[in-house]
Length: 272
Image (cartoon, rainbow, N blue to C red; front, side, top):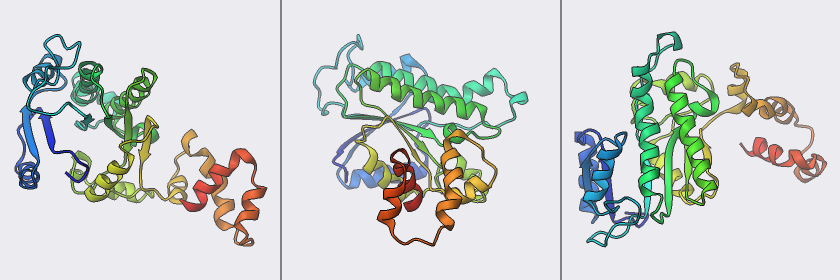
């Protein structure tokens, strides 16, 4: 409602939980129209019928649907996620599918069925696990890496796309239920509150970059915890010299003396 969305279609494999229904009721009390559809987005036919039922797509799925009482579809947010952690030697096809189907097949089906509709946004809820890796979560990492790749692919096709590599959210979600944030905090990664997550989403929703990581992180603690990744190599190399150098207070002079290719990295580390 605050972002101007008065109509919301929620598609889920299961019925809304009691807590979810309370949030839906609040939205409706504020004037929103919420339509709940039970369908499996990993099943192309199930999802297709769900979209046809609301005249979002036509029977051919090759063109936008006929006009109806609802306004045209403005955007898609794919936030499905399931965890089934385990060491790689204990992983099998079924456990891979449990995690990958909702994300991989679900995202692809949404892409295929809405690619001919002019959308304002197409947002995929990915995970920081595809940036940093995550022991015991091979299926989770692979599934989210697909989302990141799909976002880049859509951009090459001239379609809106944004894959958000979220860190752990507190209070809600599968990771929160397993209290993963406690373990990550020891590595310098903090949890994202639901309120903060929604505010961040609102700010990033129209970003042109196809992939953005959203992770509250203390880089000095993170790099000191033993992570040796190409993604963090620049931080690890520059962080000690920048953090411990208190001899100069002339910020502009330091920035001027920094090599052109290193200026952005210098600023990110300094203010991050």
